[in-house]
Length: 170
Image 1 (tube, rainbow, N blue to C red):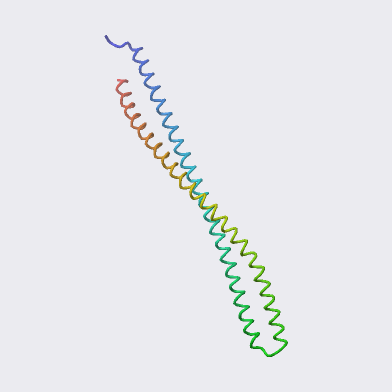
Image 2 (cartoon, one colour; image 1 turned 90 degrees about the vertical axis):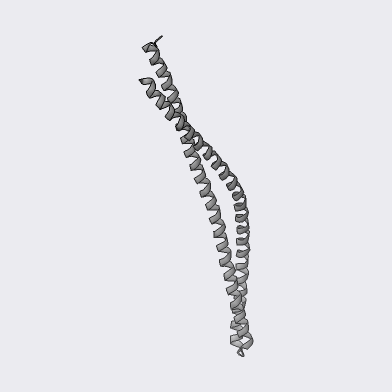
């Protein structure tokens, strides 16, 4: 018994609907994959910003440590000059300069302690972010791999369906 042309058309329409469903599913998978890539880029950027914050804090600490070292060296120089001077006027001037350097050291020391606290907080935050970043990146990579595998599988299925479609048209 030969298929009625109307029945063949109905089967062809049902087949086309199946193809369209798979095409929509493939589009959805590709959209999800793009979202995963975007999310991964976002967490990489966030991780990079956290690392830069730590670097900036380290740089600030090193600057204050260098200033403290410079002030300490200046104080030692002034003390050496103080020991070698015979003039009362020079002695008083050097004494004032030494007192000024000590005050500057004290002020910078407060700032240095604050910078150290900020650095420690930034490092702690970065370490916590590092753990979250690593696990989230692994999770996203696994999801991305799964989406790509599903997309490849659907592509293969669609190619077969397109070939069957051509056969059914004839």
